[in-house]
Amino acid sequence: ETGVTQTPRHLVMGMTNKKSLKCEQHLGHNAMYWYKQSAKKPLELMFVYNFKEQTENNSVPSRFSPECPNSSHLFLHLHTLQPEDSALYLCASSQDSYGLANYGYTFGSGTRLTVV
Amino acid sequence: QKEVEQNSGPLSVPEGAIASLNCTYSDRGSQSFFWYRQYSGKSPELIMFIYSNGDKEDGRFTAQLNKASQYVSLLIRDSQPSDSATYLCAPGNQGGKLIFGQGTELSVKP
Image (cartoon, rainbow over all chains, first blue to last red):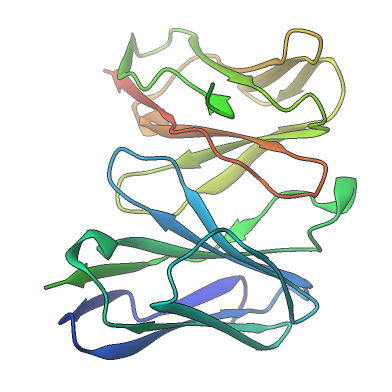
């Protein structure tokens, strides 16, 4: 496989459930990102990982818990979500997240999350 | 002031016309600028990036950058119905992170 792969593509979960989103990249990149995209709103950066280390948490509620076991894999663990958390969650990767070496991100296809 | 501002549209142009998409940004430290295209229900895909003031052309697409005015634009010549999508402007800040605008919806009418 090539590029950035996200699973599942669609997820419906109750507010008391625990679920995880998975992202895998086959590009040899060292930085990975989680973004949230809600209707009619800009992409919101949630977390940044560089070489497996979290370098940014953009004031994300603790009900979202990221995990990056290696440079190729990124998870987003979800628990006790709210209906307003329903959105498209996008994973992206880049060479790294420092300066001009960043030639843009490659996005996965996203997970469409619905919280009921 | 928003970090990145784009007209949300929709911008409607006839097939074959030039579509002009504009973006202003607030971070004077931004060094790299990216344009992404996002079809409905799909993820964003990179179509252009520019680092230097002036114009950069790639096929039917031309990106224009004016750092003094903190302004970047994307021109699409000979617009096609397949160009109908939302176009996202994303300046890269000094930390290398991309901050996205809300996007401009483009509709190309046959």
